[in-house]
Length: 185
Image (cartoon, rainbow, N blue to C red):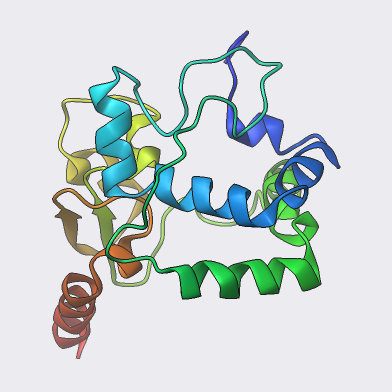
């Protein structure tokens, strides 16, 4: 990522992201949720951005340059936001951010694990999930990920859906789960 901002590197800096997010939980959570859903990603792509966050230098903060929407999307309410804020008021962001900080520990401590998932599996994502834009490819999703699974039964790409797949498209996610369970029954 050289001189560009990448959120996973930003989250490695202990205390920095916590300070940014916790300084205004309501604003931070609202911006994060609404910029990475389908609507937020459509907005970013219209602006010529290639993913969740605008191109910015490595010294930027996570929220720099993100859109502040005037309204809530259909799948996310003020009550949802209030609840999330109340939970982060109690716990803060350190625990969730530590997941990113543990990535190198995982590589060091878990090298003996098989590189392939052996259990029957399916993979579901939205076509506008920002994660899908990290490494651009014309190759279909199934072809890109199938080497990670011994028994990948199917994939689902939900059109127009962003990062919060189960919240943005609960019916489609439930249908995929039921299909998967029927296939392994």
